[in-house]
Length: 423
Image (cartoon, rainbow, N blue to C red; front, side, top):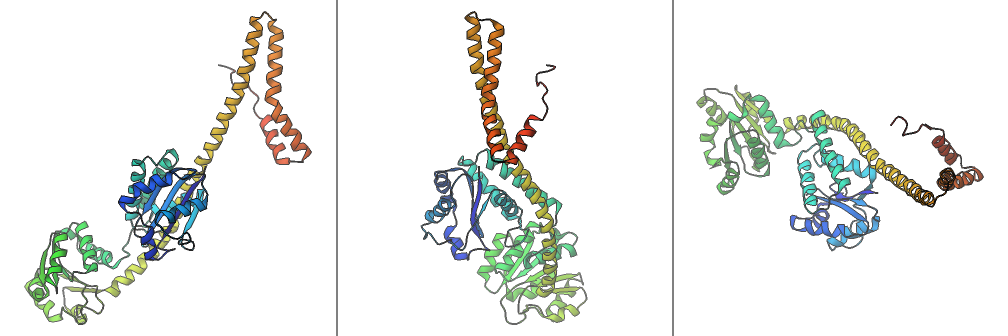
């Protein structure tokens, strides 16, 4: 049996191509049914996110058939993915899936969201009865591996985005971030990410100030916050423990004097200011004020660079775990072949023995001497069971096939004890 992983991702294909081969929620059910209909495919799971679309399947199916279905389903030219796809088999496919679920193949190394997306893809395939015993075990082991990687390495720790780094810094400075009052200046994508991270940390008092009040309201509604215009900054600053600014202004919008007045009203209670804008939103001279702690995007970038290096080192440790677990699954998969071979061999020998036993019993019923019947039974049983091995031995000897001779010698030089002895 063969496990295959066919796909494209952010490393191999541009975003416009990734968009064309993505499966939306409405398409997944039909896609799973369609791929299950391909000759040789027995199980299938489709993982589709903004950064990757991948098909995992079990079965003896040709590479061209899989790739042709992949492009055909989306009505793309046959060669559309020719230089943009990857196709892994067996141990490589297993390791790839485990790496993906562990966040090692993500655009942001170690990001945790992909594990939930892989779990969702597995659940959808299971609901469609596209998952059988092999992929069931593979995905369950993959989920355990991802959890182990998360718990035993630092691959998911340390901030590697500016927004998350800003919140992480605030969390380290304030012992209880949830009780802090936060002012967001600007309502763009970066501010929205900061707001999301703040909510995840339990912050409940978030104020959004923006040049366009409507946009401030839209963001404030998402985080149960309050919306204000930039003209109200001087009134808003004294109440803020943390200020995060990210606008497109070409000139600073928070000056030293404004912050100085705010600190007086706060009775010099410390204030953390994080300027994520380029050019700067907050005057550099704010750092000269006691009780005001200003950090810029450059300060955060040095932290992020160090954290990325730490994650890369942790990823090497994670790969060791993945290699071990992938090998364990491969060993189990290969053992299924030997189990089937043993079962087939036992069924064959039992069928031969049963046939000769029926003949012997019939002869006894006919009144033949038991001793003669048993001798014939033994002779014919041994003759039939050794016929093929004898021919194999002769052929190996004639062809000087040392490997086959060694295997047969090991088989017959082993334990000759009676398995029924003592029972």
